[in-house]
Length: 161
Image 1: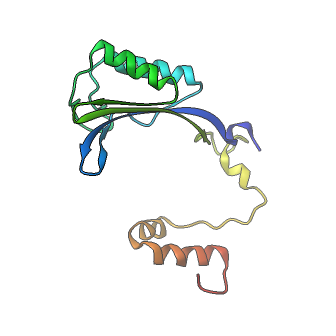
Image 2: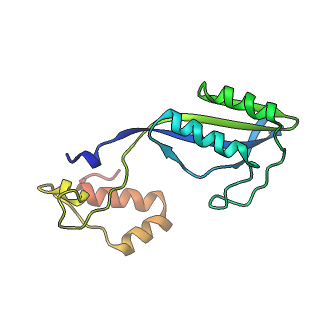
């Protein structure tokens, strides 16, 4: 297996505003977009940079505005909690939640078709079926019954699922 296809460990940073609801805190909006970092320190540094600014939602994620402005003391306390892995900072009826989670990801790697690093070369010697664009679109709109039919077709199952 080519090294670029293997799963690797990363650290994912999540920051979100929560609002107090009838059953506890509920997510108001996520602050930052999906983000992976090679080390925990890089993820914490990204959190420090984000906390220096107003914690509005990143325009790539949405248009939410921070319901509460953080004081310097709140920022320091939140960062201290986040260094432990997770942080919840209650602020009146809102709360700021953060997490630095260790995840395993297989990054998408693009390479020219003839390049041996192209992920299609990992399928060499295996029986492969190509699903048409129409079938994929139907699958997206057809739901579970269509998914079962597709799996049955792809796996050559004799009995219905």
